[in-house]
Length: 202
Image (cartoon, rainbow, N blue to C red; front, side, top):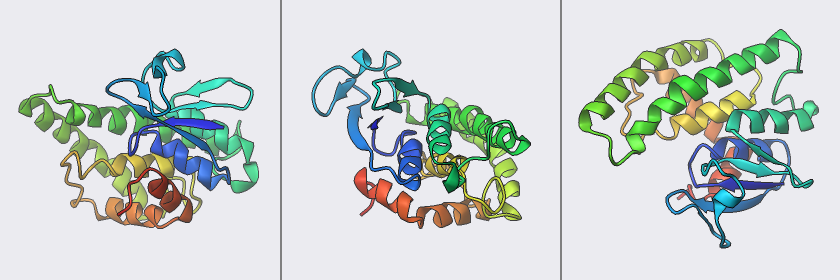
């Protein structure tokens, strides 16, 4: 499998999950500004959406959208328990979290990385995130991971989003459970390997 990624972007989530699942993915770096591949060529010829992640299967099929990719990977290795079985309420709870993370946290970080955003837009974005973080923090106060005791693909996604807080100048110190969660996930060997491969560890 080949993962199209940009260091530290939302593609970090499937990168982590691939390594948690025991895969050693082929990585293809994408310049998100120019849409050029590190190996040369136009990324939009592969993924017309122009953003990461995208994952190319050995069959040649391409999967896009992070939440879809990480669930696909998890289902390849059910013994790893990275996602509850399809058709269960627990799987619906996972999808509930993935949708919340994608629409309420991930998308709300976007203006903070947009050079055209005004200070008022950035302030409004940080205020919106401050209204969303308590919901996640509360869930993590009584349990180590979003689904309880078991680490799942949703945790890889949340970790990725929280990693943007420093460069985006989003203060999460008011929610200690978020910082503790991020450190807990960062210590996982698969996460360390993904961060190292993307050049994100000193």
